[in-house]
Amino acid sequence: MPPVDLTETEITDLVSIPKQLPDNYKRQLKLRTRSYSDKHEEAQMEIEGPSGSFFRIITRKSTANPLDFTIIFGYVPPQRSKLLHIRRYNGKSHLHTNDIEGDTFFDYHIHYATERYQEAGWAIEKYAKLTDKYDNYDGALEYMLADCNFTKPENERIQQILL
Image 1 (cartoon, rainbow, N blue to C red):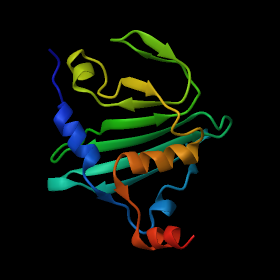
Image 2 (image 1 turned 90 degrees about the vertical axis):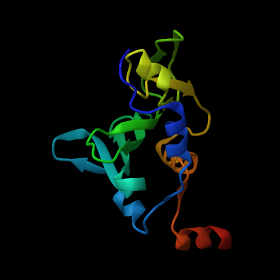
Image 3 (image 1 turned 120 degrees about the vertical axis):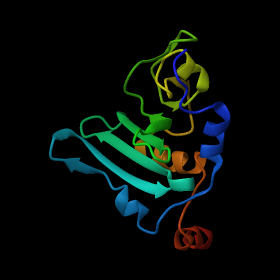
């Protein structure tokens, strides 16, 4: 049996741990074209996690197709350099198949890290479910932040209350 990087309990705990976004998180997550490709824009930021670990948010969006995007919530365990994708929020741009279940779909979907896919030798986040929680990049980013228990800076929370 292939090694398991994270158990179901560990995955659930990593998602539910409160994670404070820095005041400049919007600037850090602003999409930018990279010198190696003009086909998409991307951004990423890191947030300190427990015991020497860290979380990473990686975003990417096609410059040609606004439905082609991905937003990754990743985790790097202490004393390791391997990024584990805990969740991946994808646009409506490609066909996805869950290999164990055999179901295939082409729509907005969220990939979830699972122990059983790791045990079967697949990528930790190979399993995905259809979603109607977002229908564009901005909505997917906002949903990921809420879904993975990120807390926005206090000044932004106060602004929302005043509106």
